[in-house]
Image (cartoon, rainbow, N blue to C red):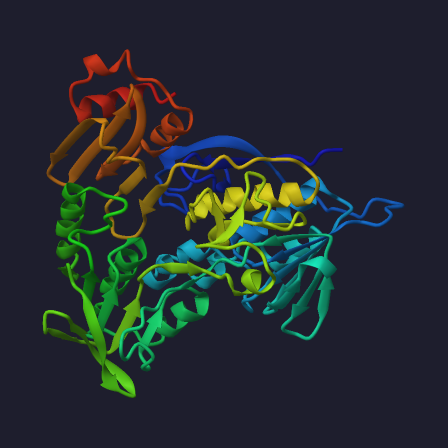
Amino acid sequence: MSPTPVKAWRCEVCGYIHEGPEPPAECLVCGAPASEFTPCEQPLPPLVPAPAGAVAAPRIVVLGGGIAGVAAAEAARQAAPAAEITLLDGEAELPYWRLNLTRLLDGEIQEDALPLHPAGWYEQQRIRLLPGVTATALAPERHEIACSNGDTVLFDKLVLAVGAQAFLPPWPGVQLAGVQALRTLADTRAVLDQLRPGLRCVCIGGGILGLETAGALAKHGVHVDLLAGDGWLMPRQLTQAGGELLARHVAALGIHLHTGAKVRAIAGTGRATGVQLEDGRELPADIVLVTAGIRANLALATAAGLHTRQGVLVDEWLTTSHPDIYAAGDCAEHQQVVYGLWPVANFQGTLAGLNAAGQRSAFGGLPRSNVLKVLGLHVFSIGDFAAPAAQVLEQQSEGQYLRFAFMEGRLCGAILIGRAGLDAALKGAIEHRRDFSTALPQLPTAAAFAAYLAKHPA
């Protein structure tokens, strides 16, 4: 008998599912408003007993407790009820929503809201969770994994979902006390322990994580200097006009923004006391947070002889150069792209888990999309919004910026600042290559197209 469905709501922007009679005010993962949720039937996760008389159950091992790893383990279990599934989580915590660490820093949520699943879920699904255990060596031809606890784990199929680590550029002084990244729950706790009004923080990096971190700290009364190395904020996600509008909003929050700022060194003896810039200025700091991007964790795969570049190379089935090993999430490189995005990691993890369990599910790539969560201003970008030959509708007003780019009548990229409610429709239009050729001649402005899309989302 199938389990009784419960009322649930799916975020059409990132795929997060919220259980309850009403959609949340905003998505826990991407910050999309309640209007972007649609009702769905989410079955209660059933107990998954081992099939009676199962012989030679396949051994599926997943390395990594991020969203890609957990999605892989979950999909493998649903596709292969007889499989022995082991999940090695390198952190001592239950696998958690990494995207929400800035919300924890902000004070919007507490730690009890972070776990992806409660502890009992893994036992219920017969997934052997090994928290705090990492793989120290991989022997693909012997199908063996040496673990940090001294054990050896055997596998028939393996999913590498080992993620990425924060990138710390080799500046002089970067190893001083008081300099750290914000990548893990432990990192976030370390920052929270130091927070007090008047604390001086230099946050290095003008991308999404840097902005979210700076905004969260400013709410605690911290003096924040935010360094962006480029000429405007989020250059990979926004045009210059969009970045400058966002900069005005950031300044209104009390964040001291420095664009085009290049770091020369971290000042201090024993502990960081400031950040020296190439233009000769020195910004005082009690703490320096580096949010300068991530690098895929490749040491294990490279030492095992798997093919790597910026990530572990995978084909459309997410198979690596070894036929029994898959890779997904922030460590995987597909067609020269390492996405580094939560929705992609979730999707790739699911497909890798299905493929490891014997199904054939291809990954064809996804348009890049980004949502800014904690600064009180809705910012969404997707796809190739700066395509050179595109037809562009662009419009800016007080606190709002709209840009839509079309190639041969099909939407190929978009930016929304200060305008919520269209994220899912834009995402769907790009993914399904929706043709607007007939409508565009009657839509002379970006605002007109936005109104049209709101009335005709699909």
